[in-house]
Image 1 (cartoon, one colour):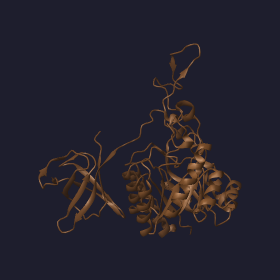
Image 2: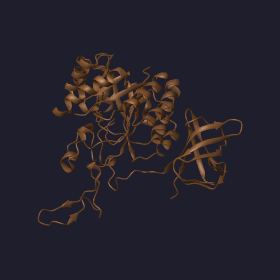
Image 3: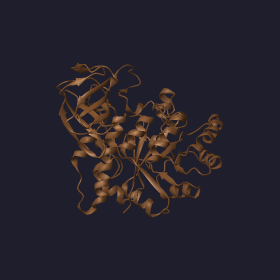
Image 4: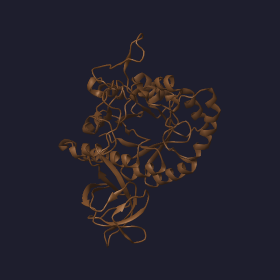
Length: 409
């Protein structure tokens, strides 16, 4: 049985640690250059060192993304960057450009290379080509069907690892190689600065009637014609594992630590349950409910079971669905008293119904009975971000447990 890696996004040091604590086998991170996610917090060299140490002490891996499509002016800086990161101990570097791969081989010969989804890997000959150039892993484009993935697996060397996205945002263009952002805003998606114009609201204007905006279909507000639903494959863990995919990738380096914890935990538990007893496995619908408690668009299965149709787009809004808020993270817990010390993240009140989520255990719900501030004073509301609180919890929790609250309609 293929035991796949669960690969999580690490947009910051906090998110890297969260991903590992909640069950990720590996995390991909970006430095302050070359990582294709300028909107993420990204890692300084000091953060890289701490993150690598944290992961390796727990037997987990960290991959460095350096997958922009560089211009001439980027080459010399990339050389210096690779020289600097090579000694840190990353488990692989992701690149998309053949020249960058060649430089990485020359300057960091012991650093395994993964070929990014930006390279548009959609067939077995492409995967075989990269393998012959020395790549350890190829990240498949999001636009692959399950049948195509199985064929790639059957026609490529067994020691070539295949990675595929199973959860997160989809793009109107092939795996992010889009020119629309550059054309409309001068922000280059292939340099990590995508403005996401595919999700904007569009109407039709006839050439001789400037200023008269006609909806692309019958709706006064126009339509979000390029706004794809998010990918979610948690209901199809058996098919994914049986396809031979080596690494199951979760998208979201610009998402929150709460998002990372929730998504990693759900996929971790479903993967483990399937591997424990494949013949008796049945999907646990509560895991999909969990994935609906993070910021997301409506879900679809992307290209896995056929090309997306009109049902795979969201035409009415480009906003995320946000039904829950992170309200705090446990920094300490006293088993004798049942009192948790919490770092507050969003306002909540005594009397609120909250849920507590932690690694490896089901979430539980309770009412906030009372709270104290860091001076030991009783308070009715926690209004200030990052304030330290103490409150009783109905069940034991571990450090880094997450408190969340449903939004009121």
